[in-house]
Image (tube, rainbow, N blue to C red; front, side):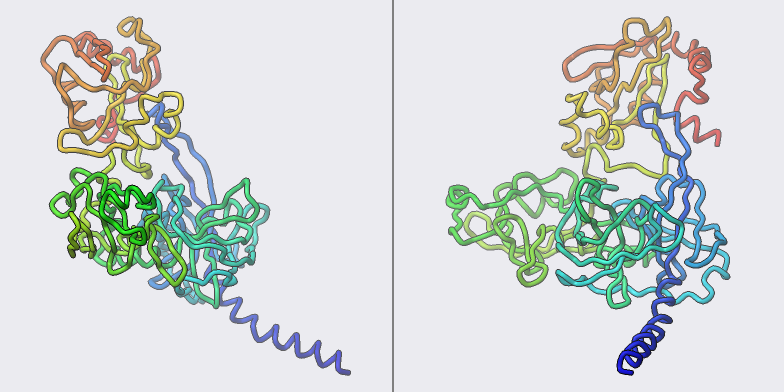
Length: 481
């Protein structure tokens, strides 16, 4: 009798919780994306691929997912939990920095019966979470459980930048990307990536960064996450502390370099010690507490700001304490000589006489830097007023005009006709509109490449036809579309 009562009680409890769970599941969607992947080594070429991911409906009839689920998309469809019909969707906004995107479905029937999921707060360590999504291995909704194991800065693979991330031990597989991690009925993060060679180590974009993304969009424009335009180092070494007049128990970071064009050169100097950020003490290892006994990179407090806001700093300069409020006017992409990863666009290029030129992008650099070590210094450098991009002689298409130069590839151009260039557009103008009969290119070592400009233009159509290339430049390609 007692056993029968326990069984009845169990099923009554199960029935009581089922509607809530069904309501939650109704907001989970599968995302189908057709992707056009550019080939940065052959910039006039691309390939088509189909990928899938997950997402969740949030307020405003929007679907929250990862940017990498829809990057380079040409066509997007979404499918509701428990239904087989697919609906056409489009990207309303995307932050490749934070690996987040918002999708929109125009058909109002898609949203009928869906209760949008709410965003929760940053979870606690060991807090239980459930990951919802549509990973490989089946077509129906998958739910895996785990706990929060770590919260700190991690490198977001999609952008290559570091932001706060949540590590969980729930099983995550391809297809889970963009799906929500839920605790107490609210989203605490969006599944971003997993480590394939580790057991159940996965990462979420936390709601603190999701809220930053949504707030940024309130004015209808995405400005991005600001960067702290200063290079710093920790002050753990006792001799370094003594040299700068710090006591053994003081923390802070030492300013090594002010990044040009970053807007902070009027406020900070090399040799300053930054002691706190927005009132939060900076530790000697360059971290700051975001909760009691929990630390992450001190730039967390910079990254919580929106662009064009000011961050408060306490600094020590020549033994004196100063209070500053410094502007945040640039994101990392504005500062780096080799920009962050490019998506949703085809690569730039220009061809002259079979000599193919392109800007050095991070998409390209990460693939070839190990085999072309002369490219590595550019990756960590910053823009200046005199140079905003690096141009490569990407490859040489064999012809009678380019004999002897076939082996040249990924060759950084330092000067054209004896002059420096500012960016790829400036280089292209000098290349194609120069008045001298021959083009002289030089690299940093003084090695030279010479192109007969007149002959190259005369043979352009023949060379393009030989290699089945439709357009001589990306600019020509865009104009004809």
